[in-house]
Image 1 (tube, rainbow, N blue to C red):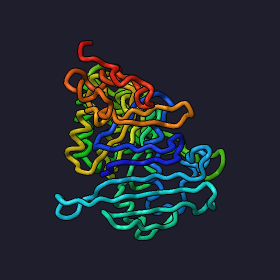
Image 2: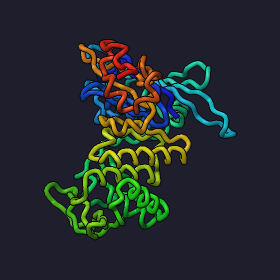
Image 3: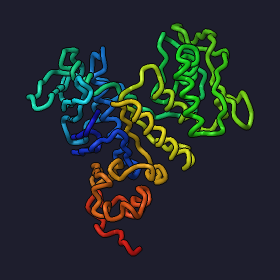
Image 4: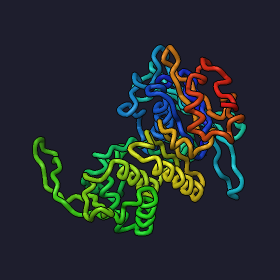
Length: 373
């Protein structure tokens, strides 16, 4: 379980420290740096991924992640991991530093510390015990920027394992795999989807022909792919292409959460995307149930919806805004000077709508709200 992340010279984060809860929501204007926090967490997971031989420059090129004017970035993660018996836990810390001036095939350092022990340092990439310790402490992360068109596309398995890409590609074949080999998991997904989108009756797949490229340029071969089909109250056998965007995004998220290799850290951009306020509230309740059922599962998401914020405590919401120079500023909504005074008077989304985001920059009045208003 992650307790905090500190981003130093990562994208527009000169130095940002964010405490993390089992469910954490990042809110604020476009371009402020919310997605950068998700990407920092994902980059740390990618660097430590098993078998990785180099820093993942395709996903996170150095020029795109090291803040302008800086020559290195640092991602520091603080957390806890369980020791036997499960009631005991130990603190750990990981720090990943990457230099812009180092050799492209191997640059940066990895540091790991457990409890109060001195930090061990090693070079990146490395497959030593040091990396194994860091990987075990961080767990596996899934970064989701789900796209309805990708979620609706027919897909086929290219390996023995079923997986969904960051944008949702592979949902149909993953559902087909779960229906065939993981019936209990599939039943849970179907029930959970109905709890958020009650108009869904049943999830199915059907086989459809599809062409895929071969190793010869310009040549294709015909394969049978899985197409996602939903039975709705309004009618049966509705192709996913004609299902609402919100329904597909919730289904994609549930398929990742209930998949055979459920990550311990789920990072979601625009979690409220295309969802009705009631569905947003139900989704948050469902996520809380899953977190309660799976100790160690953690969700960090971005949102612009006050309705979704209303389902969270102020301690679970972090406001991110941009200073005049473009660097990010972040603060927990619970740390607003009026948070405690209005805790029982306003819901979280209402409170943020009233105080705005300027206070994060130190530019707003501390008494923006008055009890008599």
